[in-house]
Amino acid sequence: MKYDDPDKDEEDDWGQPPAPKTPENLAKAHKAQLILAVVAGIGIILPFLLLFLIYGPSSCGLSV
Image (tube, rainbow, N blue to C red):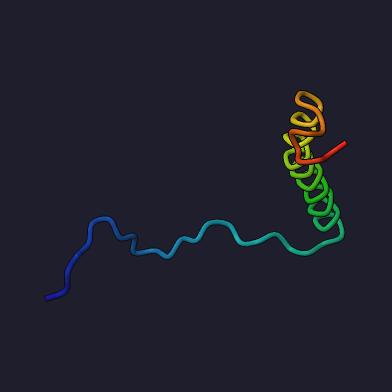
């Protein structure tokens, strides 16, 4: 006897297909990647910069 799972959909619905690689979509993707890189860079550098500005170079292990 086959188990009938009520949570399982009979239809394999994987959502929308990926967007085609048109020049317009590639430009949008490149712009989004640049924005993400800038935000990630700020997120990485900002804590070190604040620590350096608030507590001075000795807090970062730099001897003056």
